[in-house]
Amino acid sequence: MIAIGFWMGFNRVSSPDNHIQEEGSHFLFPFILSLFLAFWIGFRPVSYVFGDTANYALEYSLKEVQDVTMNWHSEWIWQWLMTGCKAAGLPVQVFFAIIGFGYVMSACWAVKRLTPADPMLGTIFLLASLMYFPFATNGLRNGLACHIVLLAYSFLLDSKWVPGAAFCLLALGIHRSTLLPIAGILTGIFLLRNVRYAIAFWILSIFISLVAGGPVSNFFASLGFDDRMTQYTQTLDDFSAFSHAGFRWDFLLYSSFPVILAWYICVQKGISDNWYNALVVAYCFCNAFWIMVIRSAFSNRFAYLSWFIYPIVVAYPLICLPVWEDQDRKTGWILLGYCVFTAFMWFVVW
Image (cartoon, rainbow, N blue to C red; front, side):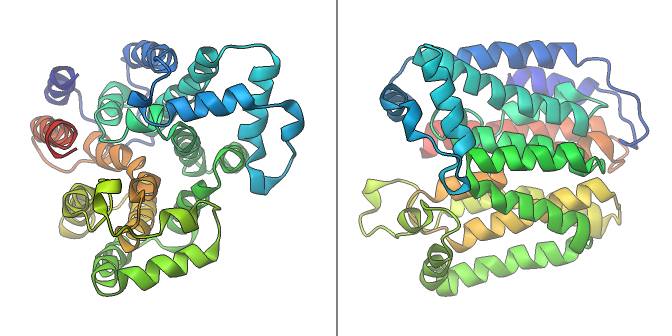
């Protein structure tokens, strides 16, 4: 995968304007690759090796039709999906395959819409992101909802409000935590166009976390927008209970790259693009929230509310904006570093 992406970075054809260019000519391969991944992820063994896969399988085996009510506070769309599959007599592997298909193909569709000049390269950035596989198998409900939000982004940025709103509501019915990234993109589209302020807010969140991380976590827990918030924002005294507790400087370093890239493109180079500006604002908004609760148990679940935007906010300017004269070569090096860091985090840090 790394070799394919590196080759693609050096051999693609650049185009300066995403909004007027014709659709890229090599979407068939990423579509077939995504389809293969959907079934490969979906038909994985039911095992705790894949995190919460076994817990979801247990919940599926116990699910009954009468347990489901149409209540926004119970994320009823997810409940109806699970119950409908159970009532149809589908085995749990088929249920996982349906979820995997939704997770992979919604992102594939979003990449096609957001980076039509080179969806193959956009797909490589997506697949090589740090949390792509974990949230396909461990936090699969959160992952499915976030990729539907990514698809909603592609419609909202294109001023197609009806399908954009429909996908947002669908995501909220699967996982209410997606309210945060939805609020982020709406802020970027309607309220905050200047990337400088978004970057400044992101930097400020680091100081807030260092100085008052505990009180801030408790404050967010008191808001109660998600019934898991109180549990997840309890800091752990024994960090061995969950490796993601404590202030994760490595994750902060990983999260900083899209911000640094945005500063270079928008501030240093003075390049302006409405789609990119809105994506940067959404990313900074969501990632700043995670930074302020970074010491919490299970903070990786909050990190994913920004990290699912990560590959797009990096790939979009490299594919769609004229940043450098030798952009193909620099994109190749960036993609290589991106893949190497992901591999380092997977095989060395974790």
